[in-house]
Image 1 (cartoon, one colour):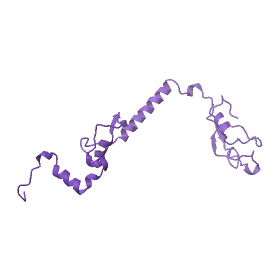
Image 2 (cartoon, one colour):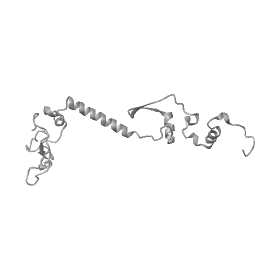
Image 3 (cartoon, rainbow, N blue to C red):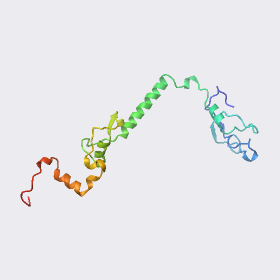
Image 4 (spheres, rainbow, N blue to C red):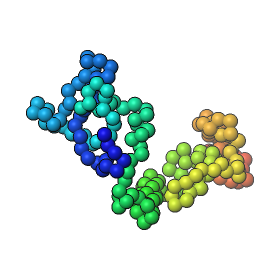
Length: 181
C-alpha cells in the first residue's frame, strides 16, 4: 500500500480490474509483471488490497478516492511562491491571448456589414476591456418605431416606400409639379 511519504509517480500493474471480494466469478488476472502479461503498467494508486486476494487492489470507492487526494508532494515539486505566481501569470496571458483571438477584426468599423450589426446597436452596447468584455444594456438607444414591434417590419412594401420617399431629409420632399419629372 502506498504510504504518505512514498513517491506517487511510481508505476504498478493493472491489479484492480476485478473485484474478488464479490466472488470468484468477478476475479480477473493481473495484467503486467507475469510471463503471460508482462505489460502494461499504470500509475500507482496506493489503494488497500482486497480481502480475498492480497495481490490485487480494491476498486475505486468514494472513501478510497477521498483518501487518495491526501498525497505527500516533495518540497521541491510543490507549487508555491514564485512557481505559483509564474503559473498564474502565464494562465492570465493565455486567457488574454485567447480572448483577443476570439474577437474578430472589423475591416470597416464605421460601417454596418450586416443587418444584424444594425440590430445589435439597438439591443445592447458592448463595453470591452482588452478586447474581451462584459455586455451592458444601453438605454439611450431608442428603436425606430418601425422596428420596435417587429424587427423585420422594414421589409414590407409600405414601409420601404415610406422610407424611400422620406429619404435622409424629409424636409426636402416637394409636391410633384410635372410628370415625368
